Length: 242
Image 1 (tube, rainbow, N blue to C red):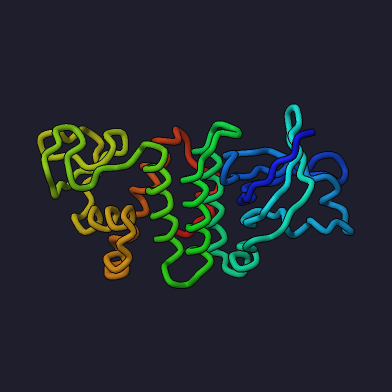
Image 2: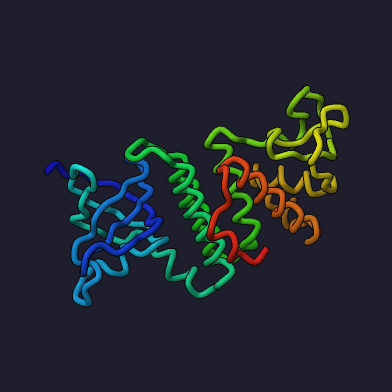
């Protein structure tokens, strides 16, 4: 069977037979890949901790008909070891993994931007420089932007008139002016809209200076925007302390 190498983030695992696991990966060059790790559940396996969710690994895989097979695995960064010590960051990180899996839908199609964004997001999540919810919200907005769903925060999404605007609607793709607003639009504070724009662009100085109530309102709108474009909510989002 042909062999290939790639680096990957482990997104999810589930049992296969008595000793194997199917590992869902987001790889740098091959996009989303599902592969079998043989014998990984045995106590004598040297791969056990290397193929846990959140782990950044360098892999060698053998191509198969339906599932590839992992033949080598080396840990590059054990994000799970740090995230596992903090419930808030762990659950927020779980949302990031599920989001990556849902947005990268085609198997073995290159998704370099999604991969780099996830690695950077997990690195930020495992640090202490930014709040867990803010790292998550920034990652969600950027992931949606990479997928072609970038929200507009400074121009009306319908007529293009420059803001600031007070109305936000996920189905419209961002903010709406007073004339273009549609029923059901949210009316967040202008500070909340500014915060969401800062999260999208990575303006952390602005995010850190934001009042907690506006951060909470931004998180609610980001979750609504994500749910609209994924067409259904994330199971892991229920465990995040928002």
